[in-house]
Length: 420
Image 1 (tube, rainbow, N blue to C red):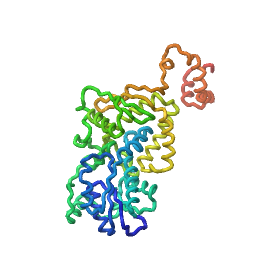
Image 2 (tube, one colour):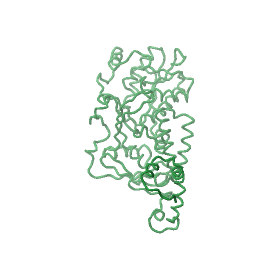
Image 3 (cartoon, one colour):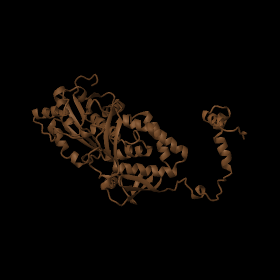
Image 4 (cartoon, rainbow, N blue to C red):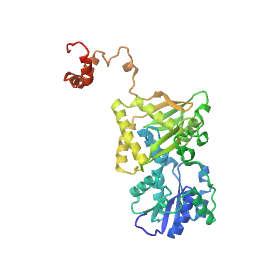
C-alpha cells in the first residue's frame, strides 16, 4: 500500500469469487473503511454475474457498480490487438492480458466518481495481473493509494479463506476443492492449476469448457466469411453484426469445430514459468482472417514491419503497460497500416484448425497478370539477371576476397576456375 495509512473509502475490483469475497470484509475490519465494489462485465457470462450485486452488499460493500464493458472491450482493445497481430510467445492470444487494462480503467473511473481514496485488487503476489492492474492505476490515478491484500494478509490458502468467511457467517458457494483456476471473458477462457501444474500431464478433457475435442468435431469442414473495413470485422457470412454478437457467433462456430485450444508453458513477467491452457475459438478465427486479408493488401516491407512491431506490442499487452506513450505510438503505426485492410476472407474450420482459404479486396496487390508465368507488360525475365547480381553483390565480394570459409573449402577440392 502507498503512504496512505488508513483509507476512508476503497474501490475494489470485485469478481464475486472466493478471494474478493474475503477481501471486502477484510478491508472493512483492517481499515474501518467503506468499500465500493466494481464489477467489470467483459463477457464472462450471465452465470458469473447473477446475484453479484447482492452478494457484494451482503459481504460488506457499501455499494456495487456493475459496468458493461463488452462493446468497449472489443472496439478499443480486442480489435487493435487483432490488427497488430500480437501473440505472446508465438501461441498465446492474451485473453487475460488484454482484459486487464479496461477492467482497471473502469475501476479507476468508479473510484473517482464515488470519492474513493484507495484502490484494491485481488491479484496474487506471484502473478502478472498485479503488475497489469497497478500499472494502469499508476497511469490513470497516481494519487490513489493501492492495497494488495495477497501481499499483506494472513489468508494464504483456500481453506483459510473459507474458514474466514464461515467465522463471519458470510455464505460462499466455493468448496475446499477447486480443481482449476479459471479466468473467462468474451475473448477466451484460461485454465491453470490442478493436474496442469505438472507439464508432463496432458490436459484432461474435463479442462475444456467452450470447445469440443478436435477428434469429436464434425467430419465436414465449416467455412466462415468475415468482411472487414480498416481491419475491423463488420459482417459475418454476409450479415452485419455488432462486435459483441459477431464474436459470440465465432465462439460458437469455433467451439463446435474444436478450434482455438492452446497448451503453453509461458514466461511470466515476474520471472517464473507457468503452465496455461487456453480456449480462444472465435479469436483464433478472427486472427486468422485478419492475417489472410493482409496477405493480399500489404506490401512486403509493410507486412514485415507489422510483424516485427507485433512482437513488442505483445509485450506491452502481456506486461500491462497499455496506457503508455509507447503503446500509443505503436498503435498509430498499426492504425495507418490497417487503413487499407478492406475486404472479405473465408476461414475454413476443420477439426481444430482454422485456415484462411479465400481472400478478396479492392485494395489487393495480387494481380494474376503480374504473378503468372505467362507474358505480361510489367516484368521482363531478362531483368532478373541484373537484380540478382546486385542483390548478391556483397556475397560475391566476400567470396572474391577469400572471406567465405565455405567457398574456400569448395575451391580447395576443385580445379581452379576463371572468375566471371
